[in-house]
Structures are given as structure tokens and as C-alpha cells.
Image (tube, rainbow, N blue to C red):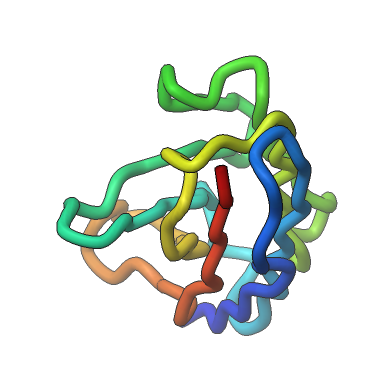
Length: 118
């Protein structure tokens, strides 16, 4: 199992930037993919960005060109640089990690609130 702790959320004006961090510990050697998800009030949790062991990166269309996901080599820390934020980005952002066999026992952080004011 992997333990995840997010930080870096807060209140920012539209057009501003935030950098989220996720500190990971535990069985990091087994991790294949880490990701950022978000959940806005009244909406389902959605994948924002993910990065795999071979550094394949995927973004949801709504954040392409504005958000950047990155990690350190040992999976100790996952980052999400968020630029040109808008009110639609307001949500709780969750860190996620998964190891093979994928989907059987993923790890989740408790989340960090991001609020973008107009």
C-alpha cells in the first residue's frame, strides 16, 4: 500500500497559479501510475492528469496547455502546476497511485481544496 498526502491548495483569483504537491510513502517501488483527480460540488470525480512509470502523460482536455504534471524519479513526490486557473477548476484535488494489477487496490490521498474566484 502507498500513503499519499496532498498540499498546496488554496484560494486564488482567476488567471492565477497554484502548485499542488503529493508526498508519497510506502511500497513506492511497485507504483506504475500516479495521477491527480478532482471533484467539484455535485459532480463526479474526474481524472485531471496522470503520469506512468515510463513518463507517459495524459491530461483531460479542459486543462491541456494550462496544467503540468511531474514527478521525481522515485515516486516520492508528485506535482501539479496549475496556470491560468479559472472558476471551473474549483474542486477538491486528490492524489492517486496504482500498482499492478491496476485497479485492484489503488491508493488515494485525502484531497486538497482549490478555489478559484472570478
